[in-house]
Image (cartoon, rainbow, N blue to C red; front, side):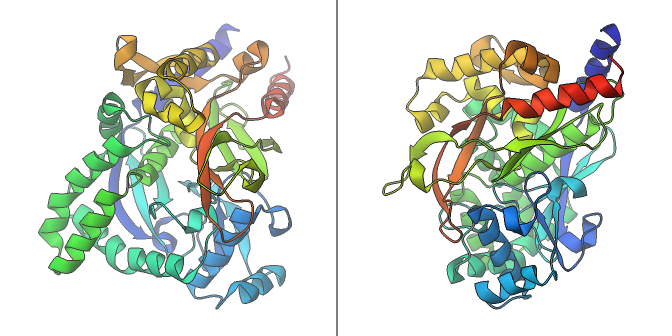
Length: 414
């Protein structure tokens, strides 16, 4: 038991010591390891087209259209069924993507570098609210926005960051948690801080005032602008904790709309999966739970790293998603201390006397206590092409933690 505790302490210390810096923006196939022209990266554990949920199928279709590989949904589906498209989890390529998570070869992506341990992580750019690719929408307006992001905003961000020292996302998160964010579903303060840090860098390199104003407005109006670099930062933190012999700390939590999967630091790269749950939340006018897809997205990397649903006490307004109270948010965080290894040394909670956020989910504690992680999430429509229909809270299936614990016992002969 002492050896497990020591391994867990090592894993979680690596996670907390990781200092991810936003270094740049570049074309995915130029920087993401293993990326190629016909590869589509997706959220969650491995999955094939036949089992994909509606929103993920919609995002794949949109990705192929945006990439110029297909002209419409029919030709995109034909390509997939003919075996001309390869699929892989973002997590298999040091990457993460919100909701459907779809990333294609020519998309511009954020580059995060963990300056403490040297590993890198990547994420696509955030589209904002409304009908967007990550929720499975692929209408002309969705594709037009994506192309603008790739042709105008992406290169401008790349040029702005190239001549800078980068942006310390861990420090930005530390500050935004003191301003009402929790780093997953609520990122209003973080996005404002992010835009403020980018603005002078953009102003220095922008050659067209109209484009500069358009980019700054897009970033400033989008309360989720910072989510994608935050997710990549959390991926860099979690990856730093992976591969510690004997550790029972979870280093990946991810969903693809069909399966929820986890990976554990001391269990190599094995996935433990089970069917996803459906989030409990508030729906946009005209939609109900009958319209909802199953839980989806890589954004649970935030909870994996000790923020998001684990830091709900910093963001009382988040409980509006389930008609809760500020005390509910506080209770959610207090509950997560029961299943984690440490309190974060950089992410703290003002209304808990600056106690560190609960960090490092221990599969043993989850199973022993019967207590599952808390996750904040958006809700996608179950059909391809529709988009977001709400937001709420969800938990993973217990089976994945039980299976992981059995695999741990077998590997370490316990």
